[in-house]
Length: 75
Image (cartoon, rainbow, N blue to C red; front, side, top):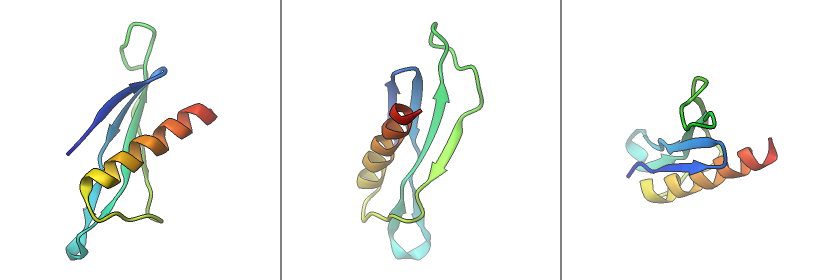
């Protein structure tokens, strides 16, 4: 379940992935800054949260989106 969210001047895509045979999901997001017309103006940056795992992809994706929004708010 991949999610996409437009937040402030950014486009956030959750890209969580499963860690091997364990069944655990690692939160990952890609963040692209947008111009005023909605077009991207840089290469997406990615962040993996290897310090946190979730039991489902949906939980990991929800966390990834929330984490990305916090990053945008702080920069």
